[in-house]
Every structure is written in structure tokens, then in C-alpha cells.
Length: 63
Image (cartoon, helix red, strand yellow):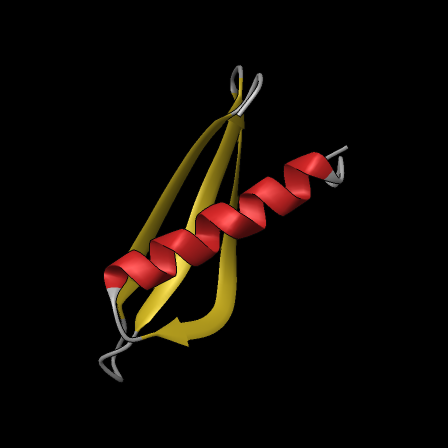
């Protein structure tokens, strides 16, 4: 997305649900965001993480 490298990822937690996270990198700076909602599948978690990253970048929320 523009000058940023966005990488979503998820992991299975103890309750059997997937937790979503996203890495937003520009140059040598990398920010990782973890989200509270839980998801039933890895693809839903990754989609949510990408949507949240897109929203943050479009709103210039990283500055």
C-alpha cells in the first residue's frame, strides 16, 4: 500500500479461535498491531487485519 509493506498474520489461541495481527513497515521501521476480535478462520482474521491496516493508512493514523 503506497510506501508501506503490509503483512497480515494470525495465530490460533487457547480457545480455538484465531487472533488477528498486522505488520506495517516503511523502510526500517516496523509497527505491529494486535486486534481484540476473535475469528473462526485464519482467512477471516487476515482479512480483518488488512482492512484495519488500510483504514489506518488512509486516515494517516501512523503519523
